[in-house]
Length: 286
Image (cartoon, rainbow, N blue to C red; front, side):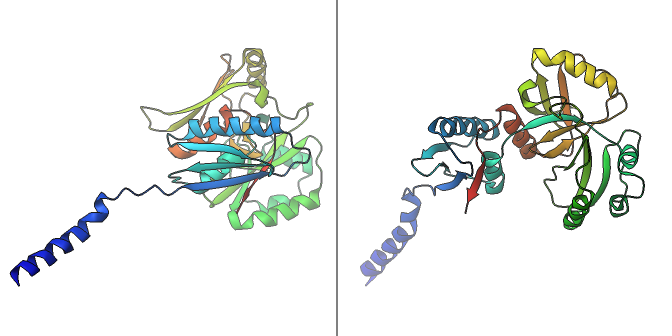
């Protein structure tokens, strides 16, 4: 009886320990995106896959497998461990268009739209200092109401409205961008040499560093000189990342963006801005 009991105990213990020694293959997570553009070419899909690969490399140390799905106009991204699925979906499907715009203040927009526009009664004033480019801010659930108001205003000459890039759905601010020149933006993605991010050692604030190409350095100096004490909006895919007020002429062709960004958010912005625009538009397939 004792022998049988010992055998049972040994079997029971082995049954507990066996899973610990079993090698299980890691779960594979994948995201599938499909282009919404007509006339897709193999070359554009290949170019898109390369840009997406570079974005993921800049964003995370995780290993990602990026491959084109033949005949489907799609790209599949696979990883053993995608921690932030939504952030990665946005990273691989966003166009990646970065540009700098001159801005209107609330008071200068009133002159453009006329003082009694209903927009100003719906948007509580947020700017607390001269040059603040925020026209007003509202809770996220009120954005649709403001959008309806903007539709009634219609097209405004030399003006384009844009919301800020709120990673958290709390309060969202509206900006009015100047579009008086040919491109609208004073600096476009073709003027940008590189985008990177780091944490300031003194303040522990996340910084996004933008370096312009040599042919845009003089242009940037001129833009900052004529916008002293006015804000310039830095826009990514139609959303305002930041709108710092220019305090001095910038002659070195560099710009530092600071804000209440987490490390993940800063890496996301840098990965998009540093690798150029996708040649195609994509949507995430659920």
